[in-house]
Length: 265
Image (tube, rainbow, N blue to C red):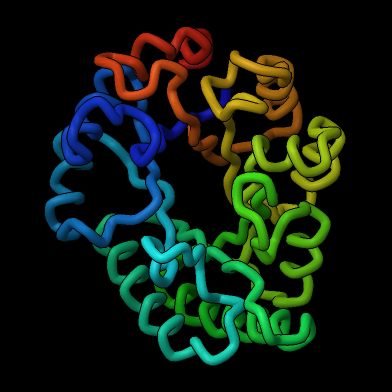
C-alpha cells in the first residue's frame, strides 16, 4: 500500500503554515514534506511534528535567492562556499527534524559558462555534500524538473538524473522522481517506473495531476493504475502529494479534494 506525505507548501494553503501540520494529520496523513523549513525554528517544527504524530520525510536545501528567481545553486560555478554553508544549515535541520532525506536543487543553467564546467561544478558539489550527509545517515535527492514550469533548470530528464547518480557514485545520492514533471517531459511513466525502481536509485516519488498540477484524479494520468504498479514493484518509499488544490485557497479546499486518497489510506 503506497505511503503518502502531504506537501505543506502546496496543500492546506487556506491556513497558516504552522497550522497545516494539524490539518494534514486530521485528514489521515502520517508524514509531511515541504519546500523550505528555514523561516521557522527547528524546535517549533519538531514540536508540531510530535504533537500531531507526523514524520518529516523531505525538505529542500537552501536554494539561493528564491525571491530573485534562483532555483538552487549546486550547478553554479563560483558559489561553492555558499552551497556548502547552505548544506550545513539543511543538515542541521534534518538532524533536528529526524528527516532522512534532503532535496538539493540543481539550479538554472548560468549564462557565460560552458556546459562541461557547469556539470563538473554540480558533480563536485554533490560528491562533497554526499560525504557530509552520510555522517548523519541522510540521503540527498536530485530532481528533474520540466522546462515549462522552470525554464532553464539544469535537470529535466530521468535518464540524465540517473546518469548523474552513477557518475557521483555515492550510495546516499538518489533521484526524486516527480511523476508530474516526468509526464510533461517524457511520459511513458509505467515503463520508467519498471526500469528505474529496481535499480534502487529512486529515493522518493511525488505526484500531481497533469497538466494543471491539481489533484491526482484530475487530468490525463491514471494514478490508480500507477499506485497498483508501485505495489507490484515493491516500492516502500514515500509519495509526496505536491499539487495545488483545484479550489486554490478556498476554505477546506485541500480536504474537500482528497476523495482520490481515501481508498489508499
